[in-house]
Length: 484
Image (tube, rainbow, N blue to C red; front, side, top):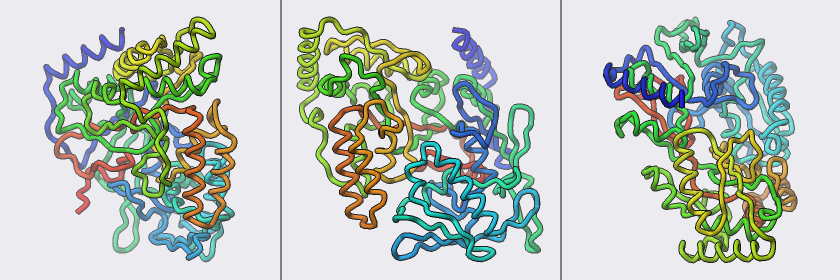
């Protein structure tokens, strides 16, 4: 209640003050939405979103992403992949660490090896296990040797987590200093004589909860909002932010309900399928009136070019009315045999959008005889909303998120197939094996897909260097610059 009142008061102030229409591209101000904002920490695992932006700006990896989400040069200015796909060879730029030391292949190989070992303990572990070793070939050439081809290695290496730090220093393309609760970043510049200096232009980044960030934008105190998700989207309507300033990124990934507790009811696959059938996806999504938000019924996006063709889940074939009728019969049959069903608890993030989402979901499940309660993720729950953008364009990424390493209800057989696929040299066979694993996971209905993830930004007219892209990342080093 206090947060809502504070937001309304800030909005009133913004309305009275009016919005700043101009953007000084030499002094760009960015606010990043973080629920329960944490201190900036580029070494955290996993990286909070604001810290990820900071690491991407100040600690380059071998490659990075450009302003449109494509893999681009980072520490390496070019690279080749051997014909068998087992070796990636990178030629390094003439670059210095931010403390002035010369960057050499031997140190880069050592730092990357250490970083791979660190990240291998977390969510990247399955993929990174395919890397054999990183070796320096000459003073400016680094080779990554693989146990099997990794077609999406460059996408992985471009992530902020793979930006390298040496003795606490990155290599740019920006340098940062703390300024109160914000970070001020300036670009590294090198003149014709090779002398490095800092640009006069500046990007200031702050983070905060969604209501505060939106209010600051309305007061003209920022030029860009990043980190928007579905739960905070209704704030934009409340603030009457113009549609022309809202930018959506059509990002692939997982958005749906994961079964966390089996219990008497959810341990039965037929009951999990009943929940999947009952959700009226188009009706749920239209409550947000966002064209970029599309329903899904498969674990891996059907549009993914390298996805093997597998049949949609059986529960998706009937019409919506038929689905809900069949689901209601399944639930009634279970109750007849087992007695009353306690309310199911679903963990959702905080936010106005979550309230809308929950109201629609509760209505759909009530129509088939299931009562639903909303809780936060730190409370006991039966279902949890997963809202995660894909870090690679490979079916393996999706299957990893639903593996026994992370999921309560899972398939060891699917995990074995994915592991086999990773170590095959035959690209066609890999796609076939990953298709088999997807079909296996689809059959157990441990994850109920609903839509693609929703990501949005608010961009003040006149800001340069910000483009919609398929990754939902808009790196700070491109802001305020005309790419032409």
